[in-house]
Image (cartoon, rainbow, N blue to C red; front, side, top):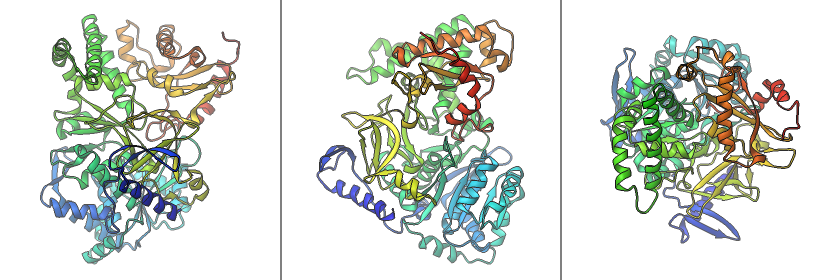
Length: 633
């Protein structure tokens, strides 16, 4: 597989040396694909430890980090200061007896210490294996067994107890430490007698072919697969990405506040990109303080999943409905924002009247929404799930462009990406640099790139199944237009085939339904059945305001799930979404569930994706009830 990976890298490089120095459609040996040239080729020494050394060399005394203190303030750190801290911890890891290639797990919320431990691990020649702070005992046991880390550092004592309870699953596990019990201090003490040159030797010994991270997919079915990503995978994507989209991290004014879990590949990628770039990085460990942190840190861009933007929109919508005038004002402002954004895509652009209307609503509506992200936000990066075109146009129209991208853990995150120069709403953008894309005969998106993963850890069968003639099979259905922009149409394994033979992509129904303020999650079902149905959960945060706006008494989600007025409102939302599709694809029945889907109850992944199989098993009785009378017209 390693040889195939190198061949994949070389093949992309050869493509770039042909008369294909610009992105475009290419046909070679009867194979037609979209090609984006390679802008950078990594050398053996250019690894993740090297990126930190390079930042220190280029910008030694410029600010690299704004670190949240225990008292709530922010303390700045330069690249030199961070590098010294990293080396101090790396010496400790060496002093604890960890050898190059040993696995090292970190479990905790996004924080400075998480980043510090990770870079120290890289500099000590270790392989970092993230564990989500929400992982169950069963998931932790599997990671300890499969990855076999020598050291696990947990954020809290509760997490340490959970890991310790499964300690026997790891054959090589020597230490389980806790940040609450001064783990970083203890590690540093272990390195008091270790000379710094040993860290330098370890760092220089790492090559682009060495594994940097094993990230376990938060998989919606079965045991998570450990995705081995080499230093070369990361560097190729980082370096080509820096040249492909310099507006993200290439300038000193760039500021990123990370609040997605660092166990997620997108958070990892953007953190690495920001550190190697020229801007400033920060971490928001407590999501409950996020709004305050955003105001204080003032990021220039943010990374979010679509659900965050849906929640912001729904909150504004529900609050506006409290009064007739504000309801009318918000409704009109939405139409103006969408119209303005769509006009930006025309040769003429927005006309004078539309620009004037937008200026009015900027003062009355839009600025309040924009203020949630702080005073400095220029754009938002969005991925992990599809964002509706309506919301994409709304947010661009109010002055906050949303740059959708697409990628997988296996691709080191972005495989496609919209940038500020070419943002086509409704797509996930064109391929990033050094990437080839094509659509298979079954409609699946296939990819080649030097950033695509090395192998699944201890899983040669799944590794082999992931590739087809050298092309990585993403598992997603997609189209590529004449300009190379990719539109994801669904997950291949999620497609529902009804008894009548109709193929239904659940996302076409689920994504627009989640935009309604009352609705939190939707799972469309109907495999082998005469018609399509849906399981729906209520948004507990939006419910009280919605009830108040409709003159209804306070009630909990369980009571609301049976309330006739609530059910009628959900029914109207379903009817509006059904109007977008054919009758064979429409939702004929739905069930409002009293139980929310959460990470804790095993129905959501840590990246907030619904686990369809687990939902179907948990609510098998409800699904059976939906089809008790199958003679629905």
